[in-house]
Length: 456
Image (cartoon, rainbow, N blue to C red; front, side, top):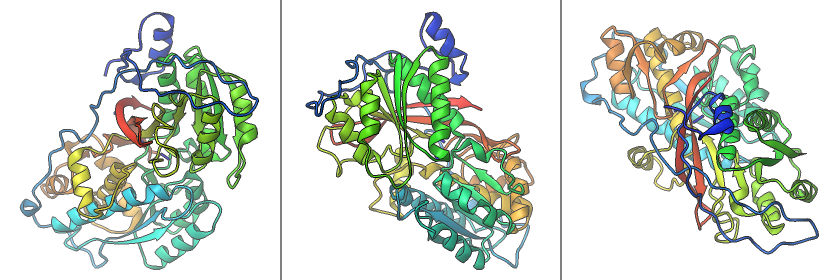
């Protein structure tokens, strides 16, 4: 899981120099972060060091802010044709530990298809999309869903959200000659995976999210760090990059506690981390945050000592007492969903409340359609050959109508989407992206605070 894009202002002195060396294109200015009172301490464990963290001021300047939409009615007719209309499948979570990510991702794919078809579709035919559940790694839902989608002759499958789920099905998808395009996979292990050139993602590798989170905690004043980590490719990959960044900037990791998928008891991990008295605690989990956060807070951890990641930075208003998480922060790859994009998403899902990875899902769908148009084919292997090219070194455009117009005029395009500039490497990874930082409000809802740009 997983993306979110410039001078570096990390402060003065040795710490500033170390942070600048990390190569993150972000501007960090010192200002107070929101915090709240400490809950009553429970149990016998010592509370961590008193929170004195002061984080950079909120600022939003990422992709999508100045998006220019093309006119669907002005799109010229396609010069190509196809006997096999483009058919997409999605493998996105409606059940399991990442089910909260499903609605924004599904809504964004539907919005993109709606806009593509309003502009005349791909190669003169409307695009069809079929949705299937990915579940999580405790079930075999993903394998069954992929079998169903492949049986319907989809050209590409958008998903999964979970890196571990994608690893379970990537061979099944790519060996069938079908593009797998994830909007949220962030495990670094995908970069060199043997995928027949058919795996792509709009979310950046956790090398970037980990680097950003580690540096950000240092910029807030943390000198020591404890971590509670899900023991799977997503969790351990992110853990390693957070640690490298934090220690590279002069900090010290004083506790690293692991747990496995399916575990329901976390007291031992919480006790060990709290006993180490870190300035900050990174909680790298999925839905388990609903159990782990109350245990930490009950031990005297201040909310603004908690730093979450894309797997668990979710609306917790129905799960925790009001104000419990106020001042906690989390990172989600990708830029924030801007107001006009949110309004557009509401036209396909009026009940939508979360927007994580919506931009990445919209971009994945749009790019597949543009690559099919550029290839003059809806075959998965042909689409894959065009995806890198449409992401860079051409005339910039930001949606299907404007981009496909340029393609049909014989021009090269550089698609810059709602999630960022993307710019694929030859491994199918975005080489530049934004990481969004969110602050929890008094209702335990994460609110956009900062957008930080980095390159890989």
